[in-house]
Image (cartoon, rainbow, N blue to C red; front, side, top):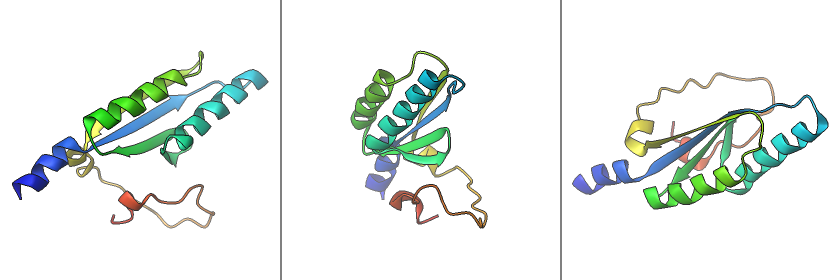
Length: 113
């Protein structure tokens, strides 16, 4: 049991929230490139400008954090939040029924909820 509790504090989640300009064509290209870089790095889109990634350790989180930082566009706002698996377990999610086709598959880590 103690081993499980230790893992809940070692396993991390990385959230990336952003608001990027998309009025000019060049800004749209940069925003698209940023979103694609997140997907290529294993992030899952929770909402259009909210992406999440499960990291097995703090060290893994730091690697992905650096990758995100390298791809941040020069304009707009990007916020990054890291939390432990234990903290993530305290999030209350409400998943309503949608008639629209989902934008992305639900990650396996979230299928249990």
